[in-house]
Amino acid sequence: MRHAALGGGKRLRPYLTIETAALFGVPAKMALRAACAVEMVHCYSLVHDDLPAMDDDDLRRGRPTVHKAFDEATAILAGDSLLTYAFEIAADAATHPDPAIRTALVLRLAQASGLGGMAGGQALDLEAERRELPLSVQETIDMQAMKTGALIAHAVEAGALLGGASVQQIAALTRFGRCIGAAFQIADDLLDHTSDAATLGKRAGKDAARNKATLVSLLGVEAAERRRDALIDDAIAALREVESDAAVRTLTDAARFVAGRRS
Amino acid sequence: MRHAALGGGKRLRPYLTIETAALFGVPAKMALRAACAVEMVHCYSLVHDDLPAMDDDDLRRGRPTVHKAFDEATAILAGDSLLTYAFEIAADAATHPDPAIRTALVLRLAQASGLGGMAGGQALDLEAERRELPLSVQETIDMQAMKTGALIAHAVEAGALLGGASVQQIAALTRFGRCIGAAFQIADDLLDHTSDAATLGKRAGKDAARNKATLVSLLGVEAAERRRDALIDDAIAALREVESDAAVRTLTDAARFVAGRRS
Image (cartoon, rainbow over all chains, first blue to last red; front, side, top):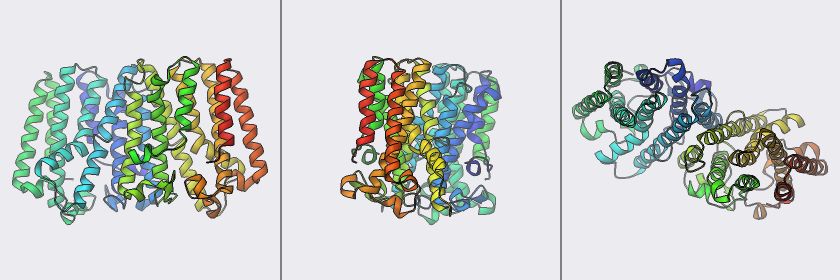
């Protein structure tokens, strides 16, 4: 579990939770536990996705994957335990004094990461790899919205829930989250297309090697870059509805980071 | 997920949740969602434990295991999604109107099934199989208390939480749950020792074939039976503290079922 969760990474999701909570005056220390719960769900998903029966990857964040550093059984159980621990952390009274907010965090985290979100998206992605017919552009967008978009959107939403945001603010911030989640995935696919393993800290060019449907392979590099930039514009437009200068400033930086990242 | 969760089984855990809740006047229909959450965690653990990297079993409840009926990636994701769905169900407002009770259900379910409970116990069990030195009697008792005892105890506790039981009642009922959890495991090991696959619906004699430490192999059949019966006596004694004739009657039947079951 330590190998999976403490081995680096961009920490985009907990950053989004903490910065979104900060818009509503929640100190970083108070948002940290909910942020960790989201990151633990992300880390568990990487451990299971890297397994030989799934994406079969040996390298993650420049280090051996969990099943390479230990063994497959340990990787399955470490992933299971990280996922379970995320819900324990979210439900614990130390995360927020109001149990109604804690149950909302648990409920939305589960919805973002389960059958209708991340795990369901991964199942669709694996199924597509095995089919003769690759996914269409719209199917790829829908699959990626589940596989990576839902948890990134929830990371933003969790900060809004902690901050007691209004329904309108939560809706606008979640739309922001969905847009940067989709942009993040395109940026990821562009990096996979153009980088090498030393820069990425994981195997490069693996999607193309598997004929995996990405928007880069379906639309080409330039159209994918335009779509990524349009999503970032949409994300920044959604922020304006929150009507907070700080929101626009901090989360605009986050959106630009997503579009411009190199690893 | 349907193959894993709807393929039969004894349904001991949801039975315990529903019957314990009924002691406090909670209708079965109101306890059903929390009971399903506990059973889904149990079903996910079977899917992952059956994987080739873990116990490598082909047969479960008289049917092919999930990775045999589908494939390994599907089994990993179906297990992940069942676990996640359990927390979604527990946290949803339809499970109980009071969010404080829902967060307590989520918190205790996570603690019973994660690193300090079921998943941690499975990790210890797998580690023991690979060691030269088998577990001692006390180590086996401790490992089994985590691997099977914690979730069975939580199934009882969940019913008490739904019913608004007092701290003393929850403590007594949880002790009841721990005793029948330990007795259940001994009954399981005795069945594995003496039955055939047709009766069990799963591979028989597999623990002995692996030199897996069980109280049956460590103590012998007769001493294991005596320990099982003493645990059932302790369980029934714990019930007396709840001071409810209905509690003693219904849950005594449950305890006797655990000791006397044949599959």
